[in-house]
Structure formats: C-alpha cells, structure tokens
Length: 122
Image (tube, rainbow, N blue to C red):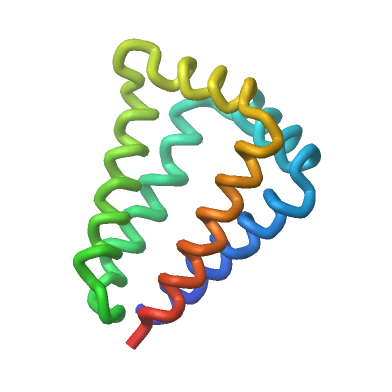
C-alpha cells in the first residue's frame, strides 16, 4: 500500500507545483473540467482518492491523520454526488471567482500536504 501513498503524494506535489507555476493555465483547465464533466462523474474522483487513502493509511506513521483525510475525501465525493442545497454550484462559482493568489495558496497547501504524506511513509 506504500505505492498508493507515493502515487497520491506525488500527484499532490505535481498539482501543487502546477498551480503555483502556471496559475492562469491551471485555473482555465480546472474551470473547464468543472464545466465539461458531469457532477456525478466528478464525485468519483475525491471518493476514490479518499478510499485509497483510507485503505493505505496503515502504511504510514500517522495513520489517523491520513485516514481522516481519506474519510474527508469520501465525504466530499458523497456531497458532490448528492449536491445538497446546490453546494456544488456554490463551490464551482467560488472557485471561478478565486484570484490567482488563491490558486497559488491552494497549490502551496497541496505541495506541503503531498510532501508531508510522502515523508510519513513507514
């Protein structure tokens, strides 16, 4: 299961680096994906990542934290799928109006999270 943690950690690092270095392109791509793909298909992504993190949490030294991130990913996928109170549209419009600095902040958080997750592998 270490492979899963390495894969997800490197994906977070790559996404964070792209968001920091290529902010405008990242924002255009992210907005396009949110517009083109159906909400129910998009819900699969965080739920799958969350499930993988939950299953692989035991191969890290901080399995509680990684497991919590996994549970949050599953909850996020469920919320996107069922969309209570138009939450997906509210989040989508918020992300579209987010400035370049906001996307850079999201990139920094992803970069740090990916690095931390990889460093906690046993």
